[in-house]
Length: 530
Image 1 (tube, helix red, strand yellow):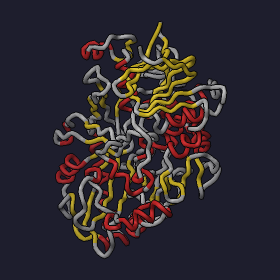
Image 2: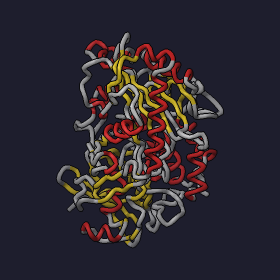
Image 3: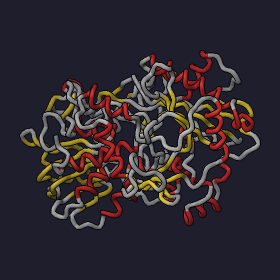
Image 4: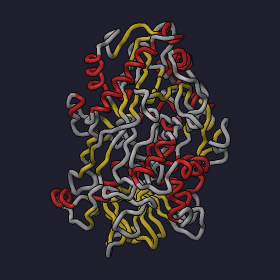
């Protein structure tokens, strides 16, 4: 017989939202919480050292997802790294602290019916989470658990890129999360004294000794246990053994944009026709589960550099030891050091493009060993029109699902990316950065035509690691959860992670996902309920 445990809450997934939910709920000593994580402890040195995050890709720390063939990307399958350990992707990301634009959250509220999620509603949760060492009110918090700081190391190329961006027409900014998002500047990072500050470090480890919080690693959740239309627990695999955990209150899915819809569908909650095709008994027909998948695509524009260094050449044991022991030196770089936000067209109400600048050749997710000195500037589409889906391939929870982000299926996305790449090619040749640019690497042409640039976009587009939307929040027919994150038509079950975002925010998604965790904890405790 499977083991049986009972808790007030079971939280599935210890990532950027789940770890926050579990830590906040367990602040009440009368509340018992079980946190289940499929991965293990995030205890590798490469987790703490900021520049080392790409070395975690395609290792035991990584879910190593691959998309379906993308017809707009020369029929390529694209690789999606996702951290499989405590802290989730906050233990493997580039640590850029960006919240998104005011327009994003007001759109959630006004166009999708996510009442209570407008910008003025979510700002207090961003501030509650944040412990910023430089910036304060009215936009920033300084006492929250998530440490945010100015990076301890900045490569001279990153400073030159900002100067060139300003010379080409960007406004300078020292705060992308303040009153105005647009402009160019250095990114703040979720680090503490030069070391990564994941949700594991910020929220979970300070809470893990509490008697009322149980954290179980190596636990792959296979389904939600349902009785009479209510979630009463979860089944999970611990090694080859199936176990059950029951709840007196609620189950919270925080597996992210891939795993949360997968668990729902394995539980019989999702599009009925698809579930029957795969062999899952339909418990509740909810068509929106797995739909609305979208992601930020990025296109690396890579140049050979001259008269400078490459961040990669500092990757040695001396600097590794320096970063580990003192939180200093080149390896405390987050790689994507500087950037900006701009519009592909003047008539847009908010930026639709973000820039990520790296003082090294970062392409193909950094999976290539550097052979010459390079620099990379990557336009990233942050207002995405294309929509894909996640679908089951098997009733076995260990099988990866079909993942189709449908990159550029909407022509507007390709048009915007082309405009962004064109502008950044001009920026690289402007101002102080120009003296460090030797010759193009990818694309190979010095002045590519629109056709050549589109070909480059199709060949080189990769994920910016920000999938969202597959359990979308709102009030329409395709909404999976309501504005209080409750799964529609099922009692005692909520989703709290990036999958509930009906539209991806304009910027890196880690901070918004942490915000969702903070607000979810309040909703579960009856605070902030409308």
